[in-house]
Length: 162
Image 1 (cartoon, rainbow, N blue to C red):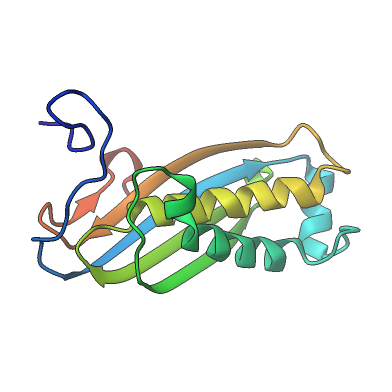
Image 2: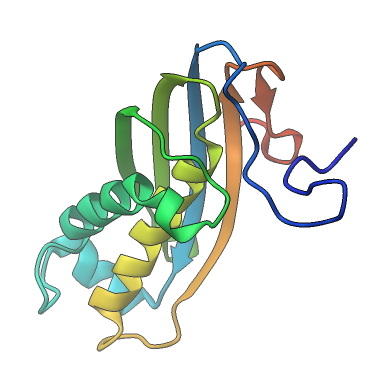
């Protein structure tokens, strides 16, 4: 397998996708923030001093995904047709899971946008809750699946059934 983001001299480059066909592409990424039970309870009940934590984090995740090409140096600017960020409270592990779905019809995939959206949403939760729990941990961020493009469908084998 070759590294497509380097030229023959080893210099970083943006991949030329001009000759690729437009296809429908979708990617789903997940990540989790772990926190104290007290903090999770406050988020769940909507009693955090900064307001609606998950509502703000949802918008932040969408905004972050839209700006992926500004954050990751060699990413293409994409015409995103769908961005969705959802949350699941995981009381048994005292955490919140963020799931970002990104979709486009284009010449390159949306994996980085989905990963960025999930991560920015989790960072926003941290920011809004840090007065209550500075020991929160963000982890388990991964690409769950993607479809479209030359490489076809991918389902992360490390996370079957999640």
